[in-house]
Amino acid sequence: QVQLVESGGGLVQAGGSLRLSCAASGSIFNINVMGWYRQAPGKQRELVATITSGGTTNYADSVKGRVTISRDNAKNTVYLQMNSLKPEDTAVYYCKISQYYSDYWGQGTQVTVSS
Image (cartoon, rainbow, N blue to C red; front, side, top):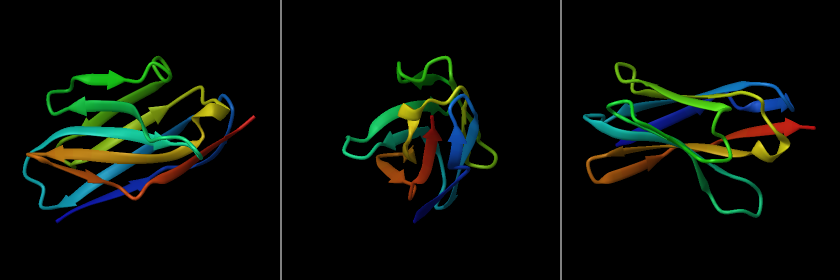
């Protein structure tokens, strides 16, 4: 069993910043990819950013230059630093980890950006 606990969401004004965290626990052996996804009301879940165990990152075009993903392998934790937030960033943000052939999702944390 793998548990993911997300934190750091909230309400922020446009132009503000938030830092999301996601800590993995349980049967953690070798996490390959850690990532963040988001789902806005009425829309499909979409990729925000991913990071491999080696530190290779990938970002959605919509967040490039505003968002930084990082991870602490010793703590099995992935972070998402979001700056210059826009109202269109409003969504539930989910973390996901991939270990061997399985994917695990967090419960989601709400990010709301007011204009």
